[in-house]
Length: 457
Image (tube, rainbow, N blue to C red):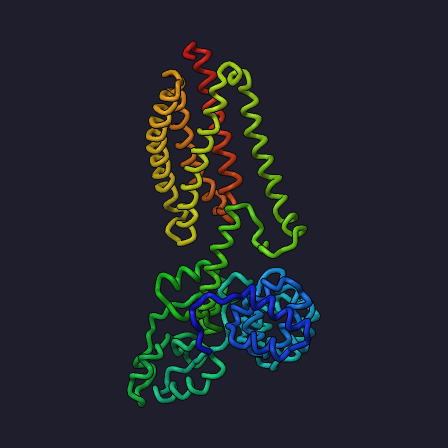
C-alpha cells in the first residue's frame, strides 16, 4: 500500500461507514476502509465511538489488517473490542502478529480467554509467547520479540544470506544477523549491508562485530530507549544472565516506548491517570480525576491555613492581598521551569543521584538570580502603581526568597521521588506547587508581619 501524507477526513468516513452499515451495504463499507492505513482505521474506530458499530466494522477487515489495527487501538475502544470478539476471531487475528505483539494482546485477556487463544495458534509460537509473558511489560524482556535471524560463527556469508532469505517472511525489519556460538551465546552481529557486500565464501567470524550492544531481559524500557537513542540503533539484542540470545528489540517498538513515556510524564505532570482517554465516558474520567483534585484541595487548604495565620496583617494593609498571588504565581511558574528541566534530565539519563548536588546548587543559583531580577522589576512596578518604598522592598525580598525556594523544591523533590522509586513527574503539580504556595505566602506575609512589628509599615 502506498501511503500519502494528506489530511484524511476520518470523521466524515466514520459517519459514512455507520450509514452504510445501517443500510446493510457491507461491500461499500469494505471499499471505504480498503484504502486506509491501519492507523487511520484505528482513528476511525475512535471517531465512531459506539462499541457495537466498531465490532461490526472490525469484523469486515481481513485478519492481517485487523491484527495491525488492533495493535494501534488503545484505551476504552480496545478493551471493548477484546470483550466482544470470540476466541476464534482473536486466534485468527493474533496468529498474524509477531510474538511480542501476541504477548501484548494475550496479556490483556482473561486467563481463560488467553489460554484458548494460545491453544489455537501454532504450538511453537505459543511456547514463545508463554515465555515472554513471564517478563514484566516495561522491561526489555517484555518488549522483545523472538523472531530474528541467527547464525553460528562457523558459517559462511553465503549460508547467512540463505538464512536471511529463509526467515524473510517470518521476520520483519531485518537490520542485522545475530551471531552466536554453538551454545547460543551472543558473539556479535553483522549488519545486513555488510553481509550483502562481503564475498560469499567469507566466514562470518571474519566480519562479525563483536562490540555489539546488548541488554539484559530485566532492563527497564526507559533505559532501552536511551540506548537506542545513544547508539542510533535499528535493532538491539536481548540476552539472559548467561549471555544467551533470547530475542531482539526493534526501533519501532522503542518509538512506542518513547511515546508512552512522554505521555505518561505529561499526564503525571497534569495530575492525570495515564489510563484516561478523550473518548472515555464521564463516569470513568470523574473516577480518575477526582482523587488528584482532592489531593490538590488538601494542599491548597494548607496554603490557605498559612494565609489565615496572617489574617490580621492582611487586614492592616489590604494591598498585601493584591500582591500576595503575584509572589505565589511567579514562584509556581519558576518551579515548573525547574522541574521540567529536571524530569527531562532524569528521562534522558543526564541526571542521576551522583551529580544531584551540582544540579541542585545550579538551580538554587538560577532561582536566586531570577528572584533578584524579578523582585527588582516587581518592586518598581508596585512603586509606579502607588505603593510606598517599604511595600516595594517587601515585594522584592519575598520574590527573591520565593524563587530561591522554587529552584530548590523543583530540583530536590523529583530527585527524592526518584530515589524512592516513585515517578518524579508526580511532583510537579502537587508537591512542588504546594511548596511554592506555602513558601510564597509564608515568606511574603511573614516579612510583612515583621515589617509591621518593626514599624516599617
